Amino acid sequence: MRRVNSCVAYIGDSVSDVIPIKAANLGFAMKATGCSMLEQNAQIKILDNNFNSVLNAGKWGFNIL
Image 1 (cartoon, rainbow, N blue to C red):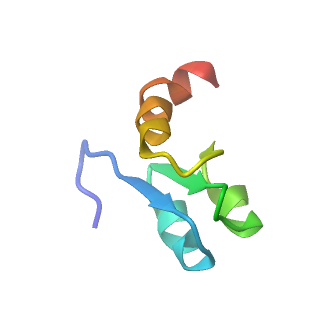
Image 2 (spheres, rainbow, N blue to C red; image 1 turned 60 degrees about the vertical axis):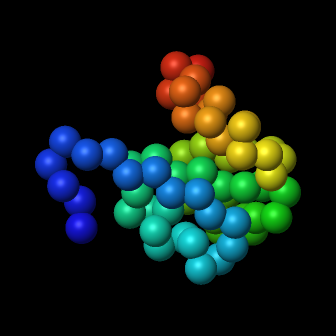
């Protein structure tokens, strides 16, 4: 359940994560182990499985877009 003035981020790497990625405000797809359906529905695609990349993308991702 979403709350007012809250932001939800979700990190996924498989087909079962597509629905939560769609529902989240910010969806991350881990490309190294991910699937194409997940990548199509995520806002940000991480090219490696390094969680430091997730932190950097969360900080700077929307500034680049």
